[in-house]
Image (cartoon, rainbow, N blue to C red; front, side, top):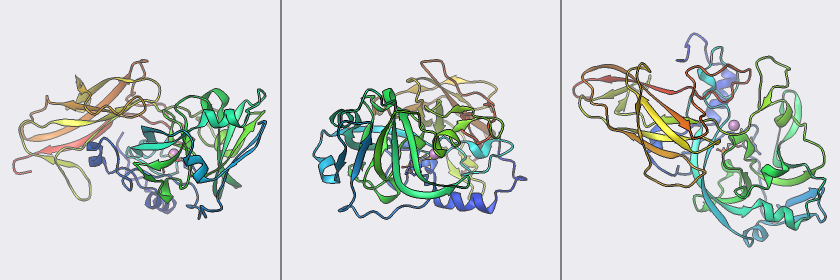
Length: 359
Ligand SMILES: Nc1nc2c(c(=O)[nH]1)N[C@H]1C(S)=C(S)[C@@H](COP(=O)(O)O)O[C@H]1N2
Ligand SMILES: [Mo]
């Protein structure tokens, strides 16, 4: 659904949008998103970190508490993986009525190569007790949200935290984490929506009861009425995005393309199962045609490239769309059910194009 311009973006939303930028969609042409072009979402402020004094604490229901410096973490087993992140609020500003928060359209996504140490062995070394049911991850950043003063905190159920691909990352695209992406250390949980990847990590606490803090029990729940508990937001739903073809209009960002063959391409991902199909429509969703998958193989935790060579338009107006399906049968619905906080709106990406000579 196109954004209704009569519902003006508020100053509060603009303030959030000016701090938290999205991926410029043309950068979807790159398999790995350069640092600085990856989207960012920061609830509070970027904390000041004295790395010499910084320690990661592992405590709670463990046999032995740990306190580790960045140097100590860097000498542990080292893993690297390209991982696609997407904010759970991606697509929020396309919902009607628009939930008031960071007003993402479709650009809250990026893929970086994260390097760090696997979480499982560290928890093992701390002697994770059998009674531990969840692991709580606490960031250094503090703020007030929903009236509650808090540190940014998210938990994971024990089996999810012990999954082999979960890492504590200290590098992004081969460089130390930049301040906006969590320096000196962040959690990386492939396949899950972005809020899971706690930045500026300072503590991991093994809990014997589920965590009921704000970012777990109040935020990141899909519900249609305020105050309902709803369902937790977990893994990324399938989504395909396209590199907008041609050139943009400065204000509207609608596209202009010359007549004749025009290759369409983009990237698709799902946190639930591998992407099995991407389809493209060049007539506003009236008919769909299969795109070709593959190209850069970034492994199981990152987006897949797609391309479509079947479009050779005459002059006129067009609405292009793309949509992905994963091998578990998850799709991108035309109109996903509305929810109060505006999470996981994976309706198909739509791009308006004028085809004219000289574009
Ligand atoms: N400590 C902390 N971690 C955080 C956040 C935050 O505000 N504070 N934002 C979360 C959200 S909502 C998202 S979408 C991702 C964004 O990660 P990025 O900015 O590196 O892309 O970080 C998550 N981790
Ligand atoms: Mo997010």
